[in-house]
Image: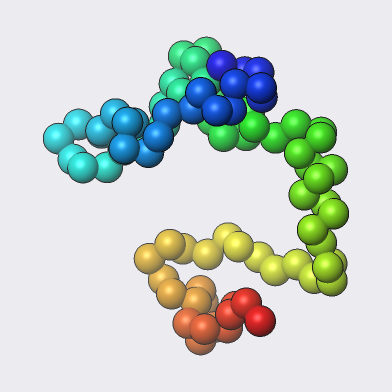
Length: 83
């Protein structure tokens, strides 16, 4: 499933297979067994161009924070509140 026109054919979250004996679901092979990029397959030049129209200020910040550490190193938990 590499064609973006098949986006509507993506499975619902509740239809995704579970990982082992857990309740966690995974999207491995949603785009086919030979695809290694996962959801990156959805990024097309057209979608990137459309997303760029949503930029208001051009400010950027690092999203590379440990998922189990609220706020990241040295930052209060609410430092990145959307205004």
